[in-house]
Image 1 (cartoon, rainbow, N blue to C red):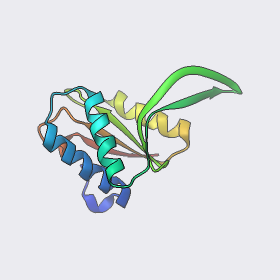
Image 2 (image 1 turned 60 degrees about the vertical axis):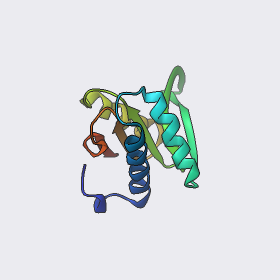
Image 3 (image 1 turned 45 degrees about the horizontal axis):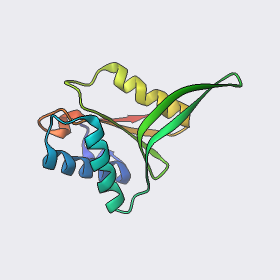
Length: 127
């Protein structure tokens, strides 16, 4: 993880709450459990949260019904994509970059909860 001082305040807040969820639950659960708990923490901290947000895909005026869904949208401005995998792969970063392009947003967090220390599973992605 990059130094926290490089992160915007919203990213820092989300990361802090994600670390709290990870400290409480530890690794080894399904992604959906972390999503629900992180959403709860974000809401408790007065942040606007939407889960499983459908992302439309348009190709030259053709609307594709592909059912892409981002995990958490915070304050309608930051995408949080959760994973519970052995290690993050380039395809996971590509997924967040694609979500950013499709939504027109600029910042995403990719969080892998299947690590002993969550700081080792954090990627901040800027379009």
